[in-house]
Image 1 (cartoon, rainbow, N blue to C red):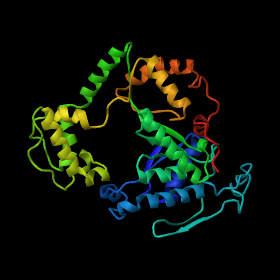
Image 2 (image 1 turned 90 degrees about the vertical axis):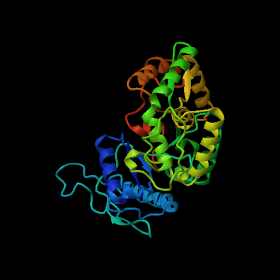
Image 3 (image 1 turned 180 degrees about the vertical axis):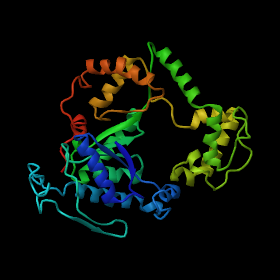
Image 4 (image 1 turned 60 degrees about the vertical axis):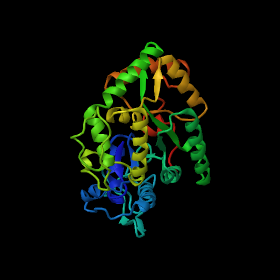
Length: 355
């Protein structure tokens, strides 16, 4: 599955590359559809910061529509039956695609036929208000950060309401929240391991680097085991190679930093202790294989989620723990397959054929 942005790529070019990957892999390719407003990303593709943040999803929708039209432009019997034909595609069997808007312009004829699964599976992160609507309209699989049960249920209900408005069935989309898992022989063992994992993830240098994204300046002179920086944050952004933050956090960072100062002052927290509290990365599920399997069974059987996108904290050990201990427990409960029922990515996900 390739993560490719719609803001700076070109629809016909990207659609062809993804179709080629899907065909060569015999229907096992996917596309994680993302947008970006970073000028430094666009500079790599000769576009710079040409698109306003507010129009990212508008272009993404038009981009995906154009790609899907290109992927469906081959007639089912378009490919010549053998190598003796004068052309490997029957004349007139491939429909040219044309788009002309202020965001997407193309005149193209697809040069790659569909794969066993029809087209690449479309993945998208869809937590934000701006992301949910295009996810409901186009995505086959949606990522989210909603691993707490109540939030997962509410998110699934909202997304399925949006699906219905676009004439799509609930089974046309799979919801896979990102989840980190820490397992132990006992609950106490798992909790102790989770504390160790979190402490290792947030080292002193990483704590400083995290704050630098918000302060917009070099903070390497500050002690991670000392108080928060005594300087006010600037509006500038560091070299993106050192990390960047979302637009939403960028615009609200002054209020966020004031909140962090109050928290650090009230509890006497050092930089590292504060970052341990406020940065993302806390394990989503901590417990024994049996207890986590019980919890996941509840999520899946109530359709709060369709599965989880694993976020390993340590490779390969954390994945080995899941494969060797959690998967068998899920299979015993009847919520995880014991054999594949097909060969394509779409079949593995239980998705219908693309319309």
